[in-house]
Image (tube, rainbow, N blue to C red):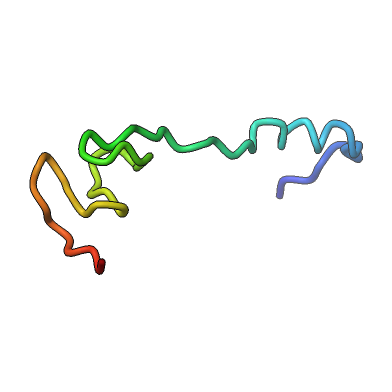
Length: 59
C-alpha cells in the first residue's frame, strides 16, 4: 500500500496549484456591427454569422 514518506508542506502543496489560472477567451470583432464576440459563433448584438442573419434579434 502506498504511504507518503513525510508531510508535504503548505508551500510545496500550493506550488502544484500555480498553473490553475483562468484565461480570457479570445474575442474578435463582428464584421457586421463591430461588437466583440467569440470566434465561430453568431453575434449576439446583430444576430449574424458569416454575413447572413441566423438569429432574429428583437428590436
